Length: 412
Image (cartoon, rainbow, N blue to C red; front, side):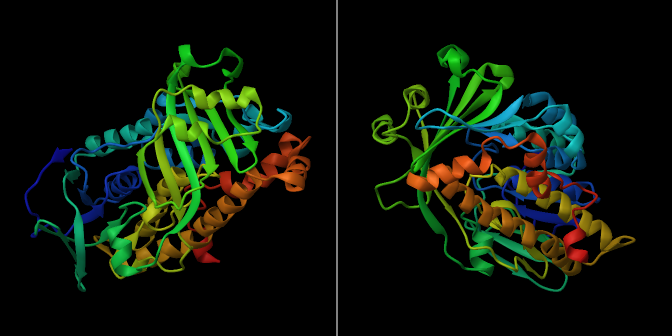
């Protein structure tokens, strides 16, 4: 994949523009190359890369990896957990356990795993490089978009211009493309997430479980799981901030994070003492919208449906979007011609209800995780003792997605 900085105003007619070079942008690029298009990725950062720590991958994520042609790369970098497990952070009782064993894989056709976010990005980047059909322009911040009946022009802040047959706005939670076409405001949650990666040697032996583990407490929760073959552990803690928060990422303060999590058990609380440094996210989402395609322009991933982290589905949804976009383009192609407005409308209709369900369900899951008082007792009774089969039934809507059914919602 070449990195270039020259203007591309006279782009070829088979070139599609993608704003954003993160997981969603690279997944979109891969989906587009598999439909025969060339792709120009416009990334505002000086280097192509990904920040963050670990993420969880449901079976739907692996279905997307396979459809994008990078399943082997992603599988080789993932850690396959034995289960997902939830404990009450106040009294350490087991609330629920979902085995992610052979029965789970047979039900959903793919595994459950955890992985470093950078390894997801790298797997997609390698696929883009191998295609020979993706160019990346770094240090390029989109300023505005213009379109006509034949294509789209993207103008950067420094005056450079690119032309393509369509634009995929995958420019994240603070999307410039969304701002121009939708113009809505973010919903700041007041919940703050601290993330860090801890070496195995520094991680408590008593918590070295091969599991995606969550401790749920009043107005807070803590997550840990292994990464990179168990050589590292991901640690994520979330709390309700006392401050008025603004959406963004910055370095975390050990003193701040240690000032929360009062009243939870020492076994869970020791997690916040482990990291030497933290990244701090003040979280937000947006109200779901019914339209994110506009002629030859559409949104994808966090630009289309930013969500909170409580279902661990942000990256998974971006990759699902990319696969669905590719399938919509396949359906709307006639020989060498593609009806872009129809394809983008089909893609949107296939995704709106599912991604809105993710956003709204994630909000509700956050409430359940952070329950206090009697509501905490109700939460524990909801899941305690539930069989693996009942958990699987409840997760069918989420993990049963695949390339074969990705357009079904648009056909109903």
